[in-house]
Every structure is written in structure tokens, then in C-alpha cells.
Length: 323
Image (tube, rainbow, N blue to C red):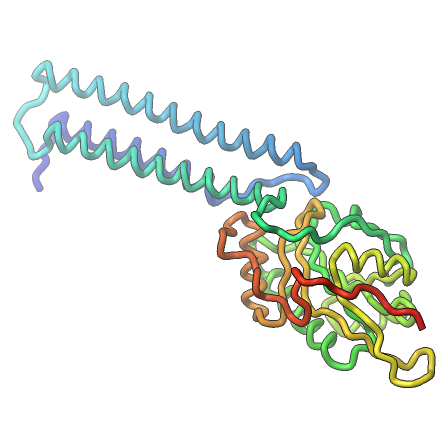
């Protein structure tokens, strides 16, 4: 098309550039993560999200006003006969351009609002039908230090319950945990945001030194946790973990432990997010965790049918029976 050099072309260029700049600003706000200190609290997060939404809305309003002013000035020029010649650009085409550009801006603004809302609901644990899993705990890590769930604020806890004398299941799950962590360590949204934790269900044999030796074969960032049998039983109840002894002989330490097989994901404020069983591949688990952390999780993300041995919604036998 030969659009000429009249004011119609200038108006078209001005409106198009304005709408593209507005869309670009909203797209950038959608892609850039919210940076915050590790010690932040929920109120700080809410304030930051609300501030981000208000800033985006204010930007769009400013762009709309500026666009309207430019359009009015250009229209006044056209009405006064300032243009020479007549090209294919008409008032109808200008109106269509404004509508299309405004729709693009509205779309990206709506997408950003939905993303922030999903992230907030994930971190506040507002998913419909979410099980009551997790809670405060205070255990001993594999360095012999007292450690509680509060020590991991700012990190997403990735937890597995098992025992070091497990002959096959636990080594397999620890290998899977290591593979998942390698994927997450390479992700731009998940790097340095995960704290893997191994909590023993066999405190009588799994002391700090035993855990330290056992974890040396797996991912270097996994922290082992132990405690008294009573504390371990209480922690297991909070996470609704099934475990029971199966004695092999009359010897006190000759036994195996039957237990549920799953990973638990807690957000950076210690709230339960999801659990992952044996039916999910390592790539699928890493993908779900990534979606939870970057705020892109939706109704299809929760692992409602991913459980391994023990369904979470059925009664469980928790703890080790007395001798």
C-alpha cells in the first residue's frame, strides 16, 4: 500500500507505537519475578503483589490518557484540513486499530492478574479440598543440631519419610529425589529455592551419624532429620505418614518397616502444597513443583491421584507398635 506522507500515516504510527509500548510493559511485568528477601512474611508478599497490580493498572491508565490526547490532536489537524491528499487510511481503520491495541493491553493485564492470584492462592493454601497435612516440627539434623520447620522459611521444603536400613524402596526414592533436584537446580524459577529433607521413621537406628553416612550417597543438599520415637511419631501424624514394624526375628534390631511412599511439597512459609507418589515420573514432579513456585499452577496441577502405597484420604496406622 502507498500510504503517502500525510497526517493519517503519522496518526497510524503514533497510535500503533503507543499500543505496542503498553503491551510490552505489561508483558515485561508478567515475565519478571517478584524479588523479595528470604525472611519476608505473608503480609509483605501481599503488599508487594497489590503494589505491582496497582503499578501496572496506573501505567495502563497513563498510556490510555496519552494515547487519547495524541489521537485528539491528530484528529483536530485532520478536521482543519491540514492533510493533503487522501490515502487508504480511514477513520474506521483508525478505530479498529485502537480497539485491537486496547484489547491486547487488556488481555496481558488480565493474564498478569490471574497469575498473581494463582501464586497467592498456592502460597496461602486455598486450593479446594486440600488435605490438612504438615505442621510445626522440631527435630535433630544429621549434624546433631536442633532444627525446626521455621529454620527453612524462605525455602520450599521437599520432604521424604524413610529409613536408612530400607533395602530397596528408599534407595530408589532417594535416587528419584536426586534426579528431581538436579532438574530444579537448573531451572531459573526454582534454583536455590528448594530445601530437600529426609525424615527417618526409624529413630532407634537412624541417629545423626547414620543419617550423615547414608545421605553421602545422594544429593549434597539433602538434610537428614531424626528425633526421639515419640517426636518422630508426632511428626508422622502431622504428615499422615503410614509406618509400622515388621519383625524378622526375636532380635531387637532385626526388623523392617512398612511405610507409605511419597514426597511432600511445602511452600516457603511452611504450608502444605502437594504430595507426589510413585506413579509420577521425576520430570512430572519437577514440572509441578516449577509451576507452584512460579505461580503458573492451575486446577490440573494438584496430584490428587499420585499416591503410592497408602491413599491419603483413608485411615492410616501411624507409628511403630510396641514390642
